[in-house]
Length: 395
Image (cartoon, rainbow, N blue to C red; front, side, top):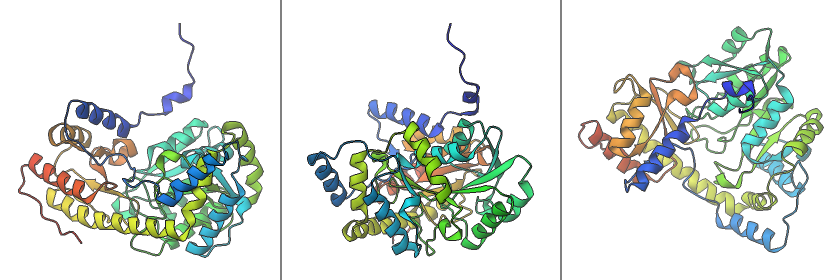
């Protein structure tokens, strides 16, 4: 007889993105050509200066455990990055290096979420965010947030939905799955309201480096009490290196350090030494070129989706996702994505992962693949839908 499992497992749903990826892998084993636009992983990898820094660290034997909060050189470089890009003075002591943004979110929730504590977030949201809250027996309260709100929470909604059990908000700007950001003025109002209520604000900024249409800003500009998550996976193209960071108020540092010591010991030492090289002028120049390429892909795929019959109600201004309404093509986004995979060889993701509000009407597309692949995917989808070839301008 198997032992009784923890009851919290009932609140953790499977990740359908990964299920589709498994289906796609099986088709590839059968010899099918599959274009992947499901998982949000850049097709770029770490640039040469970063790889060389990792090689030097290994050759020099810098492979031991580090401090649970990260090596000083990396914390200082991250702080300097905030100064250069956002004009913010962030003390390196407030920066905690983590084993990816997932570890950062886990630590933040471990420090701030009590049993039964309610955390507000928009529906749709990245699914793991609500599961991090559930992992600490909190309640992720997802608020339906449509295109008229840019799929984000507003200050008015936060005020209206705040209850006696609400303890904070968990936001993402730019967001996965929508690629939309919260305007600075609106985010300032939300932070002010949460502060007034005595709650916490956690902002996931892992796509902040990939902001295309406006000057990027960090929620850290809104006060030292805002908790910010970031990562080396997206802008810095280091997904498998599992490296991220967390910025917290000074009073939280010893508490989060204590948690990190027990839960993780430290982030990968090799990845940390490599991460220092991400901030050199040579590396930043490469990242900015790649950012421009992501924007070029966005500017191709959004109008192409419109010609295929999808509706994109909000232009994504960041990340590398498009959240598209497919209701003109199907009343079941899940079934549609499975059919597109098997019949067209194109992986897209249904809204099912991101919350019930948009589950049946929306699909998420990741344009973190080459322009050639995007064009081939559009051609395949046009054929699948019985349409003439789609012509969309490539800038």
